[in-house]
Image (cartoon, rainbow, N blue to C red; front, side, top):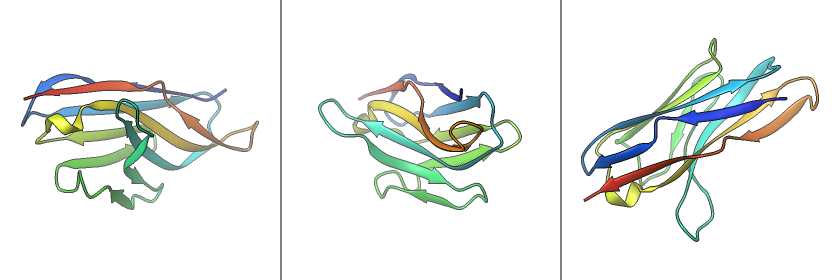
Length: 120
């Protein structure tokens, strides 16, 4: 069984910073792409940023230049450094990963979410 656990959310003033973490645990052979999504109330989840196993990154236009995604393959951990936060970044942030394991051989997993609130 593979689990993803996010941490690092909280309340911050506009212009501030937060660092989210997502730790994967269980029987893991490797992790392919890892992504951060966010969900606004009443909306579908949207992709914020992603990173391949080799380190190629991609970002939503709304966060380019402010957010940085990174990963530690040895620790099976994903990070999101969020700077210059805006009130419109307020959302629940979810980690997503494609994990190579035993059963299923390749599975897509979600964390439970961590709430980020940016006050004006």
